[in-house]
Amino acid sequence: MTDYLQEAQDLFDYTRDLRRDFHRHPELGFQEVRTAGIVARELTDLGLEVSTGVGKTGVVATLGGSNPGPVILARFDMDALPIQEETGAEYASQTPGVMHACGHDGHTAAGLTVARILDAHKEELKGTVKLVFQPAEEGLGGAEAMVADGVLENPRPEKSLSLHLWNDKPLGWIGITSGPAMSASDRFTVKIRGRGGHSAAPHLGIDPVVAGAQVITAIQNIVSRNVPPLESAVVTVTSMTGGEAFNVIPETVELRGTIRSFDPKIRELVLERFQKIVIGVSEAMGCNAEVDLQKITPATVNDHEMAKRVRKVAAQILPEAELDADERTMGSEDMAYMMDDIPGCYFFVGSSNHAQGLDAAHHHPKFDFDERALPRAAALMAAAVVEFLE
Image (cartoon, rainbow, N blue to C red; front, side, top):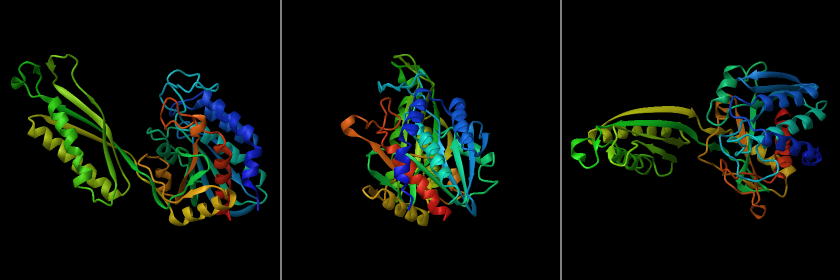
């Protein structure tokens, strides 16, 4: 049996150097011009068939084996976040206000390593590997853009795979869940309008601030009183803005936040109750409300049989790993748009190291990870691809 972990470890310098270069030069969603250029160059140098500009700044490469077989899609995201880095690392971001605070730099580097490993075995492969480097995963619609540009056609994949370095868990841990792995995500903006006035005479106005406070409290009852106790949902208000002066009741207040769920029926239930409660409570307080709900991504749901087979592969190539078959998160992932159409498995690779201080949460200014997770991620992805080609 091929030792994919050893091959990935042999390429560790290559992977780490790429990751640190991407980290120094982060690019926001749909702006990954430099990153995509490096990805395309590396894949072209392998002699692969490469397409650029897929979904604006995405890159797709086709690696054909010597024998006929299925088409397997392996996807890696490339975008950074609008966060000012505070790690102090020697490879820290050189772009003010932008950093790789979620590990996508590692995903891209691991994906290029997977390409090298698989290319070295192309004479043995039965089928075709579609390597997809996706832009704008962070809520900007990158996966949808790639799907619209035909990433799931010509050739059409039979199965799809993706991964995430996971700082919630330590190096040595692997999470491969059957069924829902990441939640659906919906974004809301609520504008509550009252009648402004002087803070000393609130009876002459209609206070949207008080109405907003009542709305925030009321919508928390959706999960506790409308969602069945054995199901999951989260309603979070992350922003409440309104008014500029300390002695003026404002005309309007704006609430913003997210709604997350796993089950499509629960998702629709929460969205329906949210709208009714926001409008009803606002009216009861003498205000009127406008509700803007945007569906960001459906839940990421793993195919049961695929998850089972990836766990088998993980046990073979990472025998010392702590395998977790029940890791689910209310974080969301637009890989769901590809997996909605193509059966898939999305897995997590533990990457934190508390002793070295590499344990900040995703999207934190001090986020960084133990780079020894990179060959583990590349090896597992390469081995999983081969598993489904066979």
